Image 1 (cartoon, rainbow, N blue to C red):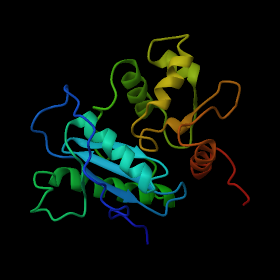
Image 2: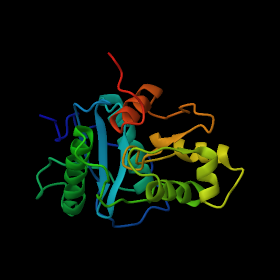
Image 3: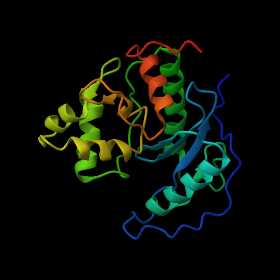
Image 4: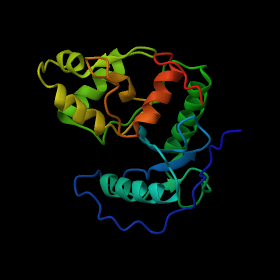
Length: 215
């Protein structure tokens, strides 16, 4: 059974200074770790607006660092999804429901039972050119297909910006759900990936783009 509760211990008080541009009074983000996936444990975090980040290799140190960064960006300390609803996590019910929905959809995706995510997304961790590229990727590159960096640059009206598209992929706060693993080199190479090339190969194999590894 996949572990959808907070599998990592609650981090100590997060001391990253709040982002002065973060909205004041927003509900605190909620987080959980989805364990036992084909690409290892995933940290999921959501606000009252939607899923805000997915982080690969979510062991204890990665979870603590990621939550500290998230607290700084959003101006509110994340709380575990399993925390009592009447306690510290008050006002975060929407975020909790979104984390639970994201976990269910990701479990179905990894089983091969889901091809398109419908969980609401909070795009607040990306903006500008990067945000345009990521939204275009999410809207135009379906399960089981790939796109070249150059082609994706053309789709956002910036021909010649293939390198900048690569930077946008590296900045993606919502990997797997926003499928940066489907962006490859125009010459057929697999390209880079922030979660590691083995993770990218695994995701593409799950979608039938690459043959499954023999071992």
